[in-house]
Image 1 (cartoon, helix red, strand yellow):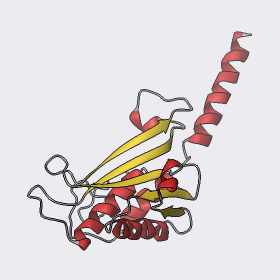
Image 2 (image 1 turned 90 degrees about the horizontal axis):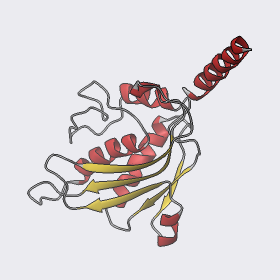
Image 3 (image 1 turned 90 degrees about the vertical axis):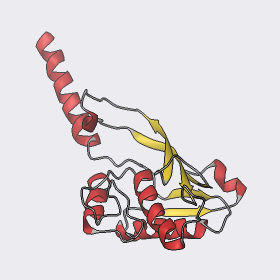
Image 4 (image 1 turned 30 degrees about the vertical axis):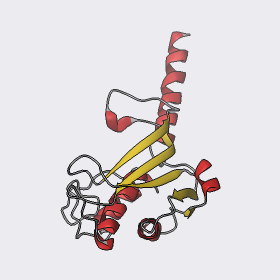
Length: 183
Protein backbone atom coordinates (compact mmCIF):
# COMPACT_ATOMS: atom_id res chain seq x y z
CA UNK A 1 0.00 0.00 0.00
CA UNK A 2 2.82 2.36 0.90
CA UNK A 3 4.48 1.73 -2.48
CA UNK A 4 1.25 2.53 -4.32
CA UNK A 5 0.81 5.84 -2.47
CA UNK A 6 4.43 6.80 -3.14
CA UNK A 7 4.09 5.86 -6.83
CA UNK A 8 0.88 7.90 -7.19
CA UNK A 9 2.52 10.89 -5.48
CA UNK A 10 5.54 10.70 -7.81
CA UNK A 11 3.32 10.47 -10.89
CA UNK A 12 1.12 13.39 -9.79
CA UNK A 13 4.08 15.57 -8.82
CA UNK A 14 5.82 14.86 -12.14
CA UNK A 15 2.68 15.60 -14.14
CA UNK A 16 2.01 18.89 -12.35
CA UNK A 17 5.65 19.93 -12.72
CA UNK A 18 5.78 19.07 -16.41
CA UNK A 19 2.53 20.88 -17.15
CA UNK A 20 3.03 24.02 -15.10
CA UNK A 21 6.76 24.60 -15.51
CA UNK A 22 6.11 25.90 -19.01
CA UNK A 23 3.12 28.04 -18.06
CA UNK A 24 3.38 31.80 -18.66
CA UNK A 25 3.43 34.45 -15.98
CA UNK A 26 0.07 35.73 -17.23
CA UNK A 27 -2.53 33.15 -18.12
CA UNK A 28 -5.18 35.29 -19.79
CA UNK A 29 -4.90 37.25 -23.01
CA UNK A 30 -5.64 39.93 -23.91
CA UNK A 31 -4.32 41.75 -20.87
CA UNK A 32 -6.18 44.93 -20.05
CA UNK A 33 -4.02 47.95 -19.38
CA UNK A 34 -5.05 51.14 -17.61
CA UNK A 35 -2.98 54.29 -18.17
CA UNK A 36 -3.31 57.47 -16.17
CA UNK A 37 -4.74 60.08 -18.56
CA UNK A 38 -1.52 62.05 -19.03
CA UNK A 39 0.59 62.78 -22.14
CA UNK A 40 3.24 60.19 -21.12
CA UNK A 41 0.66 57.42 -21.53
CA UNK A 42 1.11 57.49 -25.32
CA UNK A 43 4.79 56.57 -24.93
CA UNK A 44 3.96 53.64 -22.66
CA UNK A 45 1.28 52.49 -25.10
CA UNK A 46 4.03 52.37 -27.75
CA UNK A 47 6.09 50.15 -25.42
CA UNK A 48 3.18 47.72 -25.01
CA UNK A 49 2.72 47.74 -28.79
CA UNK A 50 6.43 46.95 -29.27
CA UNK A 51 6.26 43.97 -26.90
CA UNK A 52 3.06 42.75 -28.53
CA UNK A 53 4.76 42.89 -31.93
CA UNK A 54 7.89 41.17 -30.59
CA UNK A 55 5.70 38.42 -29.11
CA UNK A 56 4.52 37.39 -32.60
CA UNK A 57 0.91 36.91 -31.55
CA UNK A 58 1.56 35.44 -28.11
CA UNK A 59 0.92 38.71 -26.26
CA UNK A 60 -2.22 40.77 -26.69
CA UNK A 61 -3.11 44.00 -24.92
CA UNK A 62 -6.08 46.32 -24.84
CA UNK A 63 -6.03 49.51 -22.87
CA UNK A 64 -7.44 52.87 -22.06
CA UNK A 65 -7.50 55.72 -19.63
CA UNK A 66 -11.16 55.97 -18.59
CA UNK A 67 -11.60 55.66 -14.80
CA UNK A 68 -13.98 52.70 -15.24
CA UNK A 69 -11.18 50.76 -16.98
CA UNK A 70 -8.93 50.97 -13.93
CA UNK A 71 -11.06 48.62 -11.81
CA UNK A 72 -10.72 45.59 -14.03
CA UNK A 73 -7.24 46.25 -15.42
CA UNK A 74 -4.61 43.54 -15.22
CA UNK A 75 -1.83 46.14 -15.45
CA UNK A 76 -2.18 49.70 -14.14
CA UNK A 77 0.42 52.25 -15.25
CA UNK A 78 0.96 55.34 -13.12
CA UNK A 79 3.38 58.21 -13.60
CA UNK A 80 5.31 59.82 -10.75
CA UNK A 81 7.98 62.50 -10.49
CA UNK A 82 10.28 60.88 -7.93
CA UNK A 83 11.58 57.52 -6.83
CA UNK A 84 14.79 56.51 -5.09
CA UNK A 85 17.97 57.72 -6.81
CA UNK A 86 18.81 55.54 -9.81
CA UNK A 87 15.36 53.94 -9.89
CA UNK A 88 13.36 54.52 -13.08
CA UNK A 89 10.22 52.58 -12.16
CA UNK A 90 8.80 50.29 -9.54
CA UNK A 91 6.35 47.44 -9.82
CA UNK A 92 3.90 45.94 -7.37
CA UNK A 93 2.81 42.39 -8.23
CA UNK A 94 -0.29 40.61 -6.92
CA UNK A 95 0.43 36.92 -7.42
CA UNK A 96 -1.74 33.85 -7.07
CA UNK A 97 0.21 30.91 -5.70
CA UNK A 98 -1.57 27.82 -6.91
CA UNK A 99 0.97 25.03 -7.04
CA UNK A 100 3.99 23.42 -5.58
CA UNK A 101 7.33 25.09 -5.20
CA UNK A 102 10.66 23.83 -3.98
CA UNK A 103 13.51 25.52 -2.16
CA UNK A 104 14.93 26.74 -5.47
CA UNK A 105 13.58 30.11 -6.68
CA UNK A 106 13.62 28.99 -10.31
CA UNK A 107 11.38 26.03 -9.67
CA UNK A 108 8.10 27.74 -8.82
CA UNK A 109 5.62 25.54 -10.55
CA UNK A 110 2.42 27.45 -11.19
CA UNK A 111 2.38 30.96 -9.76
CA UNK A 112 0.88 33.59 -12.00
CA UNK A 113 0.14 37.30 -11.91
CA UNK A 114 -3.29 38.52 -11.01
CA UNK A 115 -2.73 42.28 -11.06
CA UNK A 116 0.33 44.49 -11.54
CA UNK A 117 0.86 48.19 -10.86
CA UNK A 118 3.75 49.89 -12.65
CA UNK A 119 4.87 53.34 -11.49
CA UNK A 120 7.12 55.07 -14.01
CA UNK A 121 9.27 58.01 -13.07
CA UNK A 122 8.89 61.00 -15.42
CA UNK A 123 11.89 63.07 -14.28
CA UNK A 124 15.43 62.41 -13.05
CA UNK A 125 16.88 63.09 -9.58
CA UNK A 126 17.32 66.78 -10.51
CA UNK A 127 13.67 67.12 -11.59
CA UNK A 128 14.70 67.28 -15.27
CA UNK A 129 11.88 65.74 -17.26
CA UNK A 130 12.85 62.68 -19.31
CA UNK A 131 12.73 63.07 -23.08
CA UNK A 132 10.21 61.00 -24.99
CA UNK A 133 13.00 58.63 -26.15
CA UNK A 134 14.29 58.18 -22.58
CA UNK A 135 10.78 57.58 -21.28
CA UNK A 136 10.24 55.01 -24.05
CA UNK A 137 13.41 53.11 -23.03
CA UNK A 138 12.23 53.11 -19.41
CA UNK A 139 8.75 51.99 -20.44
CA UNK A 140 10.08 49.13 -22.59
CA UNK A 141 11.95 47.66 -19.62
CA UNK A 142 9.11 48.34 -17.15
CA UNK A 143 6.59 46.64 -19.43
CA UNK A 144 8.95 43.70 -19.91
CA UNK A 145 9.28 43.30 -16.14
CA UNK A 146 5.50 43.61 -15.69
CA UNK A 147 5.17 40.70 -18.12
CA UNK A 148 7.57 38.64 -16.00
CA UNK A 149 10.60 38.87 -18.28
CA UNK A 150 13.84 38.49 -16.37
CA UNK A 151 16.90 40.66 -16.87
CA UNK A 152 19.12 39.70 -19.81
CA UNK A 153 22.91 39.55 -19.60
CA UNK A 154 23.55 41.78 -22.61
CA UNK A 155 24.32 45.50 -22.38
CA UNK A 156 22.52 46.20 -25.69
CA UNK A 157 19.31 44.56 -24.49
CA UNK A 158 16.27 46.52 -23.30
CA UNK A 159 16.06 44.01 -20.47
CA UNK A 160 19.69 44.54 -19.41
CA UNK A 161 20.02 44.92 -15.63
CA UNK A 162 21.69 48.30 -16.18
CA UNK A 163 19.14 50.30 -18.14
CA UNK A 164 20.62 52.42 -20.92
CA UNK A 165 18.24 55.29 -21.71
CA UNK A 166 19.55 55.35 -25.29
CA UNK A 167 18.61 51.70 -25.78
CA UNK A 168 15.08 51.60 -27.11
CA UNK A 169 14.93 48.55 -29.31
CA UNK A 170 13.85 45.04 -28.32
CA UNK A 171 16.71 42.68 -29.23
CA UNK A 172 16.83 38.99 -30.13
CA UNK A 173 17.96 38.24 -26.55
CA UNK A 174 14.93 40.10 -25.19
CA UNK A 175 12.66 38.04 -27.44
CA UNK A 176 14.42 34.86 -26.31
CA UNK A 177 13.72 35.83 -22.67
CA UNK A 178 10.08 36.51 -23.59
CA UNK A 179 9.76 33.10 -25.26
CA UNK A 180 11.05 31.33 -22.14
CA UNK A 181 7.84 32.37 -20.40
CA UNK A 182 5.30 32.71 -23.19
CA UNK A 183 5.54 29.82 -25.63
